[in-house]
Image 1 (cartoon, rainbow, N blue to C red):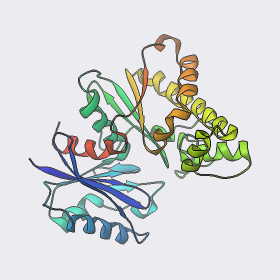
Image 2: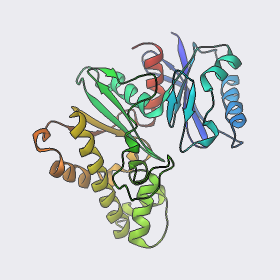
Image 3: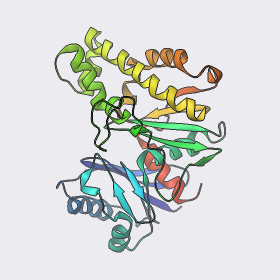
Amino acid sequence: MDKVLSLDIGASSIKSGLVDANGSIYEEKRTVIKEESYTGFIDAVKSIMEELSAKPAGITAALPGGYDIEKDEIFAPNLHILNGRHIKNDLESIFNIKVLVENDANLAAYGEYVFGDKKSVKNMVFCTLGSGFGGGLILNGRLLQSNITLFEIGHMSIDFQGRQCGCGRNGCLDEYCSTGGLMEIYKNIAGKESNPVQLGEFASTGDAYALKAFKEYGRLLAGAFANIAALFCPEKIKFGGGLSELSEYYMQSMVEEFNKIIFPAYKGRVKIERAVLKNQAGMAGGAALFFGL
């Protein structure tokens, strides 16, 4: 069975794996981008390709930002080394292989849908909770796409006078519902800095500051999900990404708040669930789109 090389591109590393049309992932690994430059990124992809056991049928690249399909140009607020680059053309020229490029949250949404929810729902929103806040929309069984990547929900503002986002605007969900947003909540409560892993460890021991930070994060996330529900009333809102691994500490407060503030006509119609594929959704989605599933 043919396999595609799926690349899930992060700020300092690339997750990769060979993925078949069943969504099975082989040779999964994480490769560090050793030099913070576009050349360093290309070198990392070359290293991945050299270590594969077989040549793939193609490459899919999940990007953390906007992508103009017609111009083959990238706008990545959290990964400046890719801004303005022509990744599809460059990778096709280097490897003489078909390349498909999409926003990482869109591919995660599609992967989670095709290999998890396709038989049960038609409309679904998928949100990624990590260094940013991204999203993808499945509408009537299809990934919402155009000549430029769509559904940049992380850049909806919840406070036009709020913190400045990497995109240049103020008050974006990307600033408040991301890892940085959670850390800012904890800093304001505890008066000191931490990171998500430590915060999870603190919460597991019953630390009051950590538990309060997660509760507040859950309420903030509920506001984001309620806004999304008001726009599309999807059957499901699913969430993945690194912060989803800590959902046991904020799921209850998030669901309780969501049920309070959702548009009344939609109450009881929208389920919130954690992603099944977790951090593999983006790679699976790349294969699903490549193979036309």
